[in-house]
Image 1: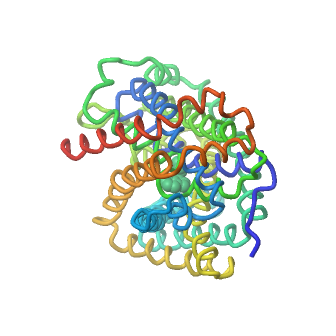
Image 2 (image 1 turned 60 degrees about the vertical axis):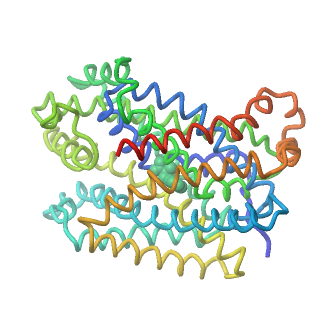
Length: 446
Ligand code: TRP
């Protein structure tokens, strides 16, 4: 069977940036900024994203393009030693499982955002509270809707599904984001928010948990550790300069997180100006779901008719960001079933998508104890540990010369480049040591 491939460089960048840019950027990043002391977090995040997450991203992309296969097949191929082959398979399979669980909670959140985007339109004709109130029925229906949209795109394949839809949704997302910022920054209160966002209080940098949160956020945002970027890399043409393309994806991801912060943090202060409560009992900025689903709607409500339009645009933005990411999540297990078990893509998409939907519904029915738990286990434990193993495989198990040969395909001068002087050391030493230290620190701290 012929493997899918992205048809152009820009197609790849849109798809991979689409995978990276998601709720993690537009919701996760700004709310982490809010709860970790503003600009200090921004600073640490920027450093970690470029110095640690980018090398890890490259490790996945290069291995994927070289193997032209999913992670479960690709990691064992890096070595001849049977025991390491077994271990590589295990890492790949754990990645599949992790990605399935991530998609199952991601679809629930994205479903909420989707229902919130429909509410302003529905309210023109009917009472739309059902769409914005937390209920079992609403959660079930919108999780299902979002999963079906994800499955429909993935069933269409790499270039006519993932690439085509990412090329449509990403520009729309960027346009909406910039439009909203331009409007919001004209409102009273915005400048105070901007200051909180951009002027760091350095004393907060080493406050417990800040660096850990920033690292976790960077790994989640760049979609690392589960073979997601590995499979996207496997669809990238050998002609392309993978070092540069990967840098673009990182830049767009980090850039859009930063820009989303320019929207969300000032909006909180605008809300405060309107009398909406934005600080919790401890005096910290409200974050997480309370921010998105209570503070923001309260603000939009106060803004009158234009507020309804802004609300529609805002939640549409979030839904689009969610969809370009959810397809990348579903692609990981689907690619595995298609490649390693010879199942047709359409069938694989519906069956795997269906199973993940069941998992989602299980979470919906056991929301109180399960939702937070699966988020914590996958993003704080599985992802960093798996990310560590991906780095170890790329840096220690894989022969250096093979990695270089792969990079050189689209970048003949690679051997003399700054990238090649630094990257091998990074994936061998800096990334693993850093991840281990952070992880132990997190275990002790919690
Ligand atoms: N990075 C996306 C976001 O920021 C989510 C995502 C897509 C993801 N694919 C992933 C997270 C793979 C972890 C692993 O919302």
